[in-house]
Image 1 (spheres, rainbow, N blue to C red):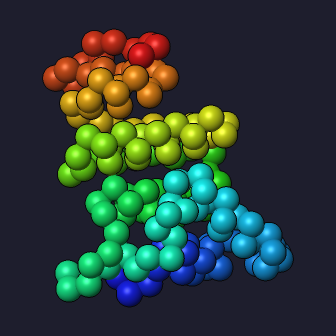
Image 2: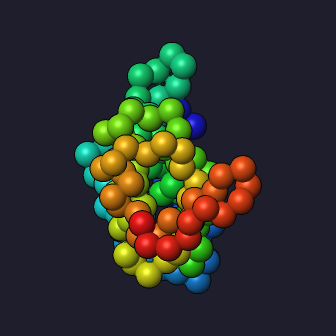
Length: 140
């Protein structure tokens, strides 16, 4: 919702999706950890924005969208084109945030088309397809 801030959006989702057995302090720790993990500290109190209210950049919105998914700490995260529509700098920050999620012991599977060399260097493994056939699978 464009009239909410990043922190409000994540908080709203946390209280709806996290187990009710968690204390408010535990939920707040998860919220703050998610904000930090996705690199949203600088914009955490900024409105998301909508068609008539200026808010987050495209990259920040993508990171917020991913933050809402990693909030519940899934062991496996599938992402379809998380960098589509972003400039190269924003795409880099999104993939860098995903790499930090993967470093935390979670598996991140993502499709991506034509990444920059900087973005490509962030990937650990590569599954390259051509015409629906496997061309390469291994270390990037």
